[in-house]
Length: 135
Image (spheres, one colour):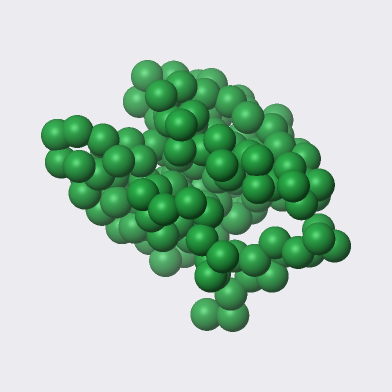
């Protein structure tokens, strides 16, 4: 199992480090890059197209279009993580992330204010199987 994590900025590492640590604790391979949907869209495109990951996690603040851009480039699942940022205290990130068209295989993460929640709708098991929600 391999998960690709794309952060819109290296300042997102403070939030995403716990995700990387958790995935590694479950022996999941992690591929990590910093690429912005706005500043470096070609880097995002190239990373997604070349990646052999089964799932993408896209973390971004402010306008937070990264998860949508990633989802437009692949049919593999995308988890969007809205990052708390100024001036709207993460509300802009949250709204940008959750207002994705239903056709895309994506899921927003619950909150970046919390650690990786144990009650997440995406459950990772030690057998490296990902149990997707039924709805």
